[in-house]
Image (cartoon, rainbow, N blue to C red; front, side, top):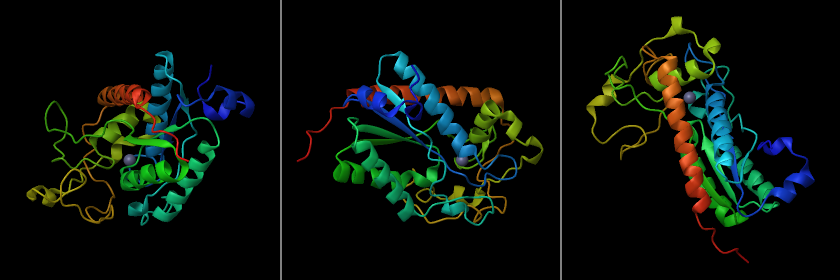
Length: 262
Ligand SMILES: [Zn+2]
């Protein structure tokens, strides 16, 4: 049986959903990814990870459903680049509220945002609580796939911990999923070396964060180093991402629902 929400007739789906159901909502983005990756990079990855994870989790006995990808999200850090399509924080939060209201009309309670774009992370944390409080859902959020900086070993470029956008890992995963969309002739290193001097200040994961736009570091909009990317590394990172998502779905399945609110 297809586990794609939108492929079901409405009455059939309504009859299949229960409190045990877990809805997987891939969150994408259409935003510049430098000269070598397509605008759709952050759609390709969560959609592929979500589909693979839902199929495997369903085969392992979980009641999981794949919602249609939300392709446009909060990409304002890339607004300077023509081609980027973006929603404001206010709009995206309103969209997630409306989605929550629609889900709350079914018997399902658990929804996981499988996030393909780091710029959404803070907002999805806010949405988690909003959907819990306002629509009595049990929301979760997690990144789609594994993004990590190239280590400088085993043919990986050294991204100094800053391979966060169109760098080694992301480019490798797209080489695995859609090699025809990658322009290897346009690979160029754009690592913000000056940030490596700081111990406390940096991107998410460091205690002191800062407001930034993606062309603050390099005019290409790349933050990382795609050189040395490979489909083999991408396949490995993709599989790790699917493993991670399936493990998370099992934990979500065991996670107890709070008592219904009046
Ligand atoms: Zn991306």
